[in-house]
Length: 287
Figure 1 (cartoon, rainbow, N blue to C red):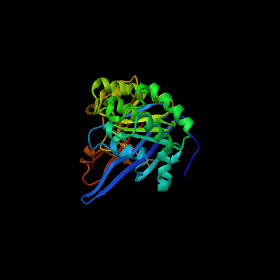
Figure 2 (spheres, rainbow, N blue to C red; figure 1 turned 120 degrees about the vertical axis):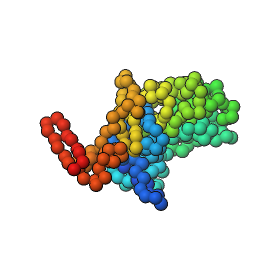
Figure 3 (cartoon, rainbow, N blue to C red; figure 1 turned 180 degrees about the horizontal axis):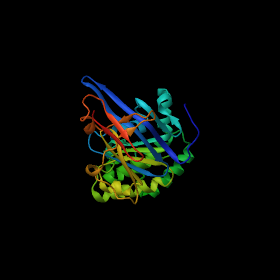
Figure 4 (cartoon, rainbow, N blue to C red; figure 1 turned 90 degrees about the horizontal axis):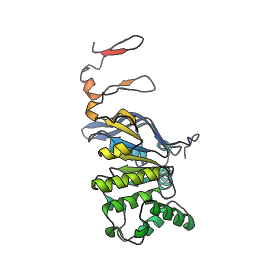
């Protein structure tokens, strides 16, 4: 694997990450030059309208997809240079994934305890360590009395808590979750968010895409995406922003090139600009 000097407090890092998909009608720039850090033991919410790049970013953080340009580093491994077998090993050991629909995360004929054992086996944990870790996690999430139940015997909230419990067995570097509260009522959703916060404090980073204001309030930090670009970032305690009120940011890469939002590009049909600057301001205008 391609490794670098360890960053003990960082589970994942994106540096200049761009993702381009090629379609019959042309290129789709799903993610554009995103720089972001995902600290260990913290919950990061990723928000944005449909088409903002949330899903593409999550796929790269889950090591399911590679960036077209830039670097995605997970648990000190840069995924762009890894072979498929290495990526599978990284996903198995260091990444958990939780889908939006609770039932999609579980196997219908396995009990709660069976799900935890299977997760430990996939992470190459010994039986004794798996049983100990599973017991602690089920107790923390209020599922001890459900350990012999099948998924259909659990509520939606319990199913989703089990999904997170099995995702964090063995303490992976990161758990990626796609709108985990979307299928839950408000009370079950809040209980799940409380559980996620508790699990994160054990050391795993959680990255959650969401449209749920409660999830944004619960998160330690929030990334706001629009048109594939990172528009703003807020941390717990700061006033959370409405996407419609965010002033679009241009992205400047390491070579000094600037990437304008699509709305601004309309002012430059000839793709030429006049640049003026002084001590505290830079102005870019059409010629």
